[in-house]
Each structure stands twice: as C-alpha cells, then as structure tokens.
Image 1 (cartoon, rainbow over the protein chains, first blue to last red):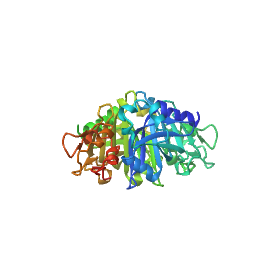
Image 2 (image 1 turned 60 degrees about the vertical axis):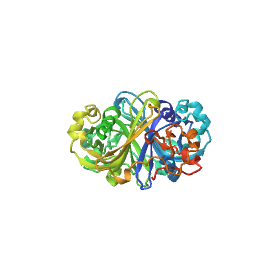
Image 3 (image 1 turned 120 degrees about the vertical axis):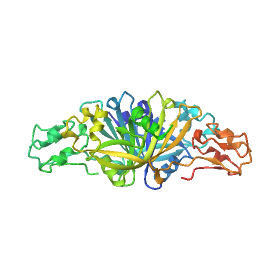
Image 4 (image 1 turned 90 degrees about the vertical axis):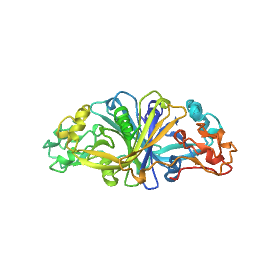
Length: 212
Length: 212
C-alpha cells in the first residue's frame, strides 16, 4: 500500500478521527474532527476561527491524527495515525468541502454561518498503519509529502551482532516475531509491538530499542 | 449525567480511544489505546515499557483522550474527551485488566509476554461530552477527581450587557442557539459550537469568546 491508500482509508473509511494539538501550557488537547478531503499526499479538514483548536493550529502549525476503521471490538480494527505540519488555506477549497460532504450543511446550514470556517491541510509528516486483526499484528509506516524530521516514527527494535542465539527472548515476545533461524536473531519489524520485553531479558544486551 | 456515566461510555461503548501525549520536541503524538477499566472517578489503561508512549507518560504524567461511539457517519456519533494527570500504577490491577478484557490474552498470551506491561490511571482532569446527533448539538463538561486547572475546558461564549438587541448575530449562528427573547441576548452554552461567528459580527462587541 502507498501513502495515498492510507490517506484514502483515513478519509473514506475512518472519516471521523481524533486530532491532537498542544495548548499554551505545552499539554496535549484532543477532539474529534472529520477528514473532509484527501489527495495523493495530503489531508484536508476545517475548523472555525472561534475555537481553541484554530488558535492552537495557528500557533504551532502542527497536528497529530489517529483514527480507526469500524468493526466490533479493537481486535477487528485497523488504525491509521499521521502527524506533521499543517498549512492554513483560508477559504480555499471550502466550497469543495461542502460539496463532497453534504452532511456538513446540517451543522453549518447557511453561507453566513460558514463565515468563521477555514480549511487546513496536513501535507508534510509521517504516518503509521496498524492492523490488530492480523496475527501477528501488522504495522507499516509511510511518509507524507517531503516528510518531517520531527514527526518521523519511532525506529523499530532490532538485534545486533552481539546476539549469541541463547533464545531467552523467544518466550518473551508476545508476537513470536523474532526469527531465530540464524544467529544473530532478527526481529520482524512489521509485526513488532514495541513492547521492549526482548531488551529487558537479553543477557547480551543485543536487543535494542528505537532511537527516539 | 454524571462523571461516572461519561467514563462508563468511554470504557464500555467507546473502549478503543485515541490517546495524545507530547514528545521531546513538544509536539503532539497520538495512538489508539483501549480503556481497560473505569471506576467512579478514573480510567485505567496499560502500555509496555518499551513504547515511546510509556516514556512520554512518565515524562509529563499527562494525557488527552478522545473517542467516539459507533454509528454510521459522524452525525450519529457521540464523542467524549478527557484530559488530565496520570499516575503510574506498575503491575497493580494488571490481573484485573486481563480478567475484564479477555481478548487482551490474544495479544499478550503468556505471563512472560506481559513482563513489560504496566497500568496507568487517569484520575484528575476535565472532560467534555459532545452529541452531534442532537439538533441543536449538545455539549457538556465534567470534572474528573479533584480536577486540574490546566485541563479545564475552554470557557463558553457569552453575551455581555453591551448587547443592544440589534439581532445581527442571529443569522450567523449555525446552531440557532442565541436566545433573543430579551436583551441582552443569551447564548445557550450547551448547544454552542464555539465557532465565533457572533463575536465577529457583533457591532457592540458584546459577544465574547472563552478565556482560554
């Protein structure tokens, strides 16, 4: 799957996601926001000038987003997260937002009532896809636009040449995603939960966590 | 509804919510986390020591959470948000977490695989409930434990004595939630979207935004 596929899942299947910004005290704030438009490399959403969300976006020009597809229980769900820089687009694309999302006219029925609305675009950053319904779980990361060094996802766990193949880590891995067919062992990064059990148990300190 | 009712919605109806923390650069990070337990005044969730989520929680002892109930399309959904201080509880209540959420044994099947898991409690802060399926929409805020000054929700919009009843704001309000039966007009805070249209249009500067 490519970036545009993950963005399509966010816009079409998830649509209502949770957006996080940071307040004046440097603390996180979350709220549910709909994803109005998506193209190959960006997501578009709207908010109103009177909201603290608007002020926090304008202050930091940064947002983190996560959402889930439907399905009964978390085991059936797929999650997509994206974080990175946002650009304010003013009224640009606002008509297209209402054209593609007709239900929005029930919340903002008249042209006057849309006075305070503005469009934002999330277009540079990184994303992660997480499928808990697969066994073992599947995680994949993807880049949005030119990426953004600050938003790059945690580097996965790995095992260094110091591994002597003792096998203690194997019983600790909840996903059984350590390949022990040769030494040094190898962690299958796309199935790894990042729990850190292998790092804690390894007598050789060969299992290593991400750099972030 | 009381705090315990909103927490029950979060745990039972929403269960998988989005949790936001702040990274070392002061930027928000989000991921989907299940709410494992709830009591009268707190929510409990778990994470593993190897995850950046764990490190960010231990650094700031703070989290923001939002989730939605199911239902087709955002217009049918109810959203609950909570933010505030978290306490690390170590292994305390971990057995109860697995007892109340048997599906977790599919992700962490053995006692060894649970080595890195710890329990966190969100117990002091503020929350907000948002029902978009009601017309006009309904919003309510609630307190968690002793509250937390930093997490207090944005104060709603209001109209001061300077209102002369000109009525310009009425056509701008997407929710028709300005009571014009007497002067000064009055905003029905529980139906207000916080869009800020009334503040922008009021010639008397009588409509005022929240303090945060």
